[in-house]
Amino acid sequence: MQYTWNDIEQHIAACTHCPLSRSRHKPVMGRGDYQADLMIIAEAPGGQEDQQGLPFVGRSGEILDSLLKDCGLAREEVYITNIVKCHPPGNRDPKEEEKEACFPYLKYETFLLKPKIIVCLGRVAAQRIISPDFKITRQHGTWTYRKNCALTATYHPSAVLRDPSKYEVVKEDFCGIVKEYAAGGGAVAKYGLYTKYR
Ligand code: SF4
Image (cartoon, rainbow, N blue to C red; front, top):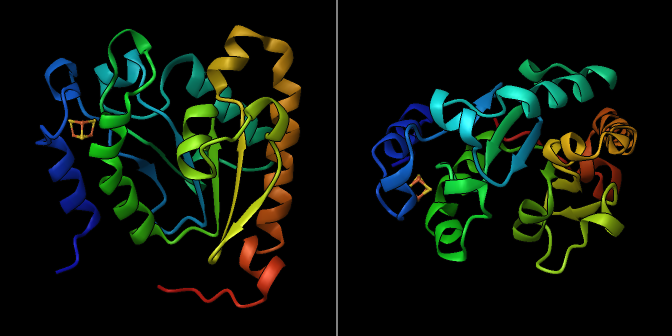
C-alpha cells in the first residue's frame, strides 16, 4: 500500500514515536508544492512553527522567503520540511533518537516528491542527509550527487538572524542552487539519465 500526502500528515498529527510528542503544541508537516523539484530540509520546527503548525513562519521564514525571492524563486514553488516534525524544547538540537524516530516521515516525503535537488539548511540537516562529518562553514554551497538527486547545504536562516553579514553568503549559495535547478538537477548534470517518476 502506498501512502498519500494526506496519510502522512495524519500519521504525523497523531505521532507519539518520540518524547517530543509530549512537549509539542502542533507537529509541523512539510509544506509547499507537491510537484516541486526542489526540496528544502531544516532540522526542526522553532517556537512559532510549533504554535502555528507550519514550517518557517516568523523571522527565519521571512529571511528564507527573501533569499528565495532574491534568486528568482517563490516559496510556493518549493517543498520545505524538517528532519523532526516536532519542536525540541528550548530550540535545542534534536537528539539522535528523535531524528531516527522521525526519519521515516522524511523518507516518505522524499519518496512522494522525488526531488531533483535537496537543500539542507544548517549543520544538523546537512550531517543527517549529506554526510555525518559535513562542515557547514567549509562545505556550504558544495554539491554531492546521489542517485537522481543533487544535494547541497547552506546556513540556516537563523544563523543569518544572529549574524546578518551571512545573508550575502547564503544568497550566493541559493543563486548557485537556482543555477543547478535550471541545469536540471544532479542527474542531468552528472549522469544524463534523470527520468521523471511521476
Ligand atoms: S518528532 Fe517525529 S517521531 Fe517524534 S513525535 Fe514528532 S512526528 Fe513523531
